[in-house]
Length: 121
Image (cartoon, rainbow, N blue to C red; front, side, top):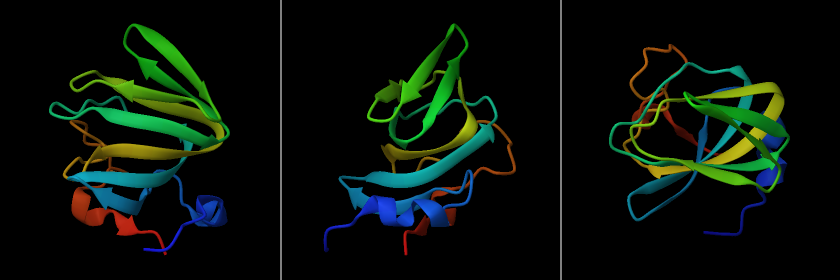
């Protein structure tokens, strides 16, 4: 694998359609564009890490809101309901087990299963 310059791919991202960047130890590294609000959901068996590469967004939890800006990260523990909200477009890296569905336990039609995550091209 060659080095990958993630910023070269930001403009090609569609909102709420993560792209697979790398796989390691049963984990996916996914590049995603957040824009607007996603649905409330949880991942019963998986933690989820959000790392902001460009922009900022709020990660709403049932008991608080975590505001994340470029260079900041937050891990949502397994089973914790959360909702990403990005009033302006925001680019993030997601680290989660390969089998995780993006919408977790919600029925949001924007959700993708592991087979729906396309590699970054």
